[in-house]
Length: 542
Length: 44
Image (cartoon, rainbow over all chains, first blue to last red):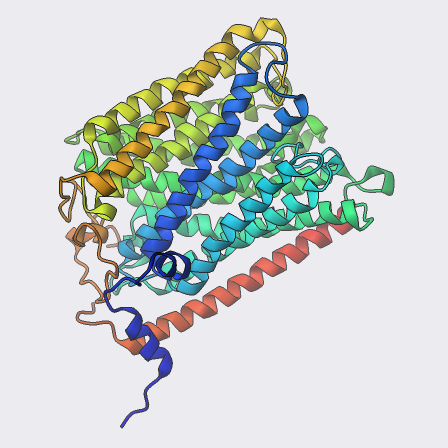
């Protein structure tokens, strides 16, 4: 009789189709990719509202010139915390949640490759943010030096420096574990026949994003560790008085920071590349070009970091290198936008809520891209740097880009997750209200920046009053609109009586749509037989 | 092209490969962290 391998017994036991009993047992100790995906998504939604509340404080203070509601120190806390919470608490965990939910189903795997580490990487996050938020109640308040934490300003804080650095370490460890898990899953757990160039573009986008995370998060960890030792252990990495160089911090930080921008947008590209073909009822135009463009953008993201710091004064050769390198990124990005539009061209289009958000993404992200190209021009950047033009630029990229793609993804896959259809009417109300208000919020900020209004300033010249008032009204409107989003989700999950079919959308293709809706707790415990018609974008590998 | 149930041996082999991938990536992470600090010390 053959000996039983206890590890194998454990694995076969794990694929029984049952949920753990008890609320705490299920959500605290879960190793199921769908449960962990849900945890990530709920956490990120909560953080969207916390970070959004910080933004409301900023917009309320900027509603009129003069000091109205808060002290300048608290205003600086709000700008710093808003950035940290939205980047590390809202956008990134939302994409990781989507990856957890969808990647195993898209590649025909029974679960993530390392399920226990998956649980750990999520449960680090709430504690990291509790630690970050706790700094707001400490003597001296929370971090006030911006999310970039440039020395020497960031080091002038009180107790918050150590706490916020430790919380950033924890966020980084969480993201690194998530990225390792995603790479290990995609490289090792694909169903037979799911070759790399047959994978959905969303899977590709996450594979490339995960490599970016592995490459740059340790650099952020190194930068903030050096900040910590400068503050508490007497080193002088960035202290000019001790022979250090504060500008070097900016180089190291942005070596992380620029790829970080792509970490927040490549999965959005992947989502839009899933949504547009479905509602165009056509395969994605130029699948391989889309994959190569993703890889090209990821590579270029490593060699353009200093465009964030042209004004520190670099040699002419450096300025030219980083300017042209940055402008090069427009080429693979243009390939992607061309291919999305060409996918729609001649398609049998319908405009359900996910498609509306995806179309808005293509248009509004392009506006953010255009302002990015103008910021890449060194002489222009000397004028725009640290003004509201930059704020407008990156909010077009991150709100109408990343956040709109996340909303498209939620509407697109919610019926698969919950087994019910959401209210299309309220989804469209949410979309149109968001699309109008977000432009009211951010478009006037271009004009403010061009007129010279600096960012991260609590008070301003009366000449900027009108555009600030319009921007604030747009901000409150956009913030309130997101309550509709929560309402649509809650209604769909708990109250909707319209059952979703397995395929959900008429034009959807891919392994995840071969499963029933809601997707069973354990899926693909039997490996799927992959046929060309089942692939998201057709068989492009031969 | 496989059909039928996952072979437990196969799943375990894949997970073993995944663990090896994870350890290699962890090594890369630690290496990059150390190099970034050394870079900070040498270029300041």
